[in-house]
Image (cartoon, rainbow, N blue to C red; front, side, top):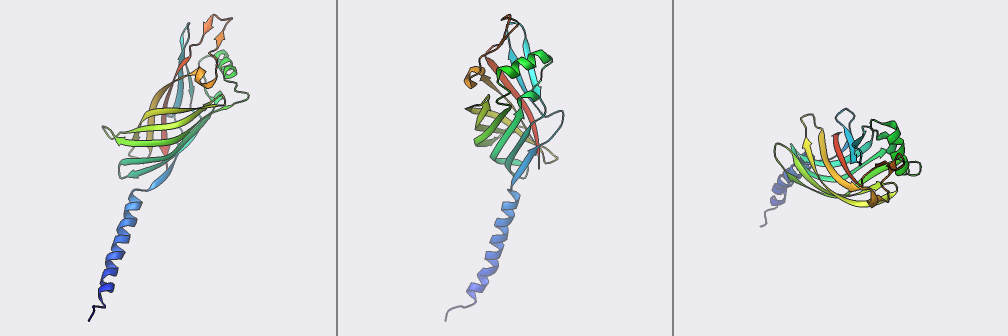
Length: 201
């Protein structure tokens, strides 16, 4: 005679398995983070000319990301984007700013944007993680693929700090390196983008 109670004995085991899987999914939850405000949040554009080096900084931008965490570990980055107004980038010289805005055709293309297309994350040292990312950067209406290695660090207050730098060239985005003062000052083609971004749930 078959043991008709056997199916009923397996039911608690199935329930326990479902609860375990659900708990695992909660621990490794995909969460939406938004950019926080503060003095430590910035994007800088560093350049040089035949006269002097220069820096333009923005602390006003919009950005969000979809991160997966497992305890204190960062395991995945599913989506990430940011957008900033060209005119939010400012140097110590207003006259230079206005010329740079003109060079990137700010009137027609008022924003700079980035969108992630792929990312892999590996553990680093001292609680930091390395994100090898691929994405699309749009400047002056021209979109180019861009690869970056950035550092991510989960913080004790459940925020995540993303930092890094990337070199680009103006001509890759159809921008002619500008010259000022009747050609006396000539801006070089190479730029470096530096950023420190803090995200909170």
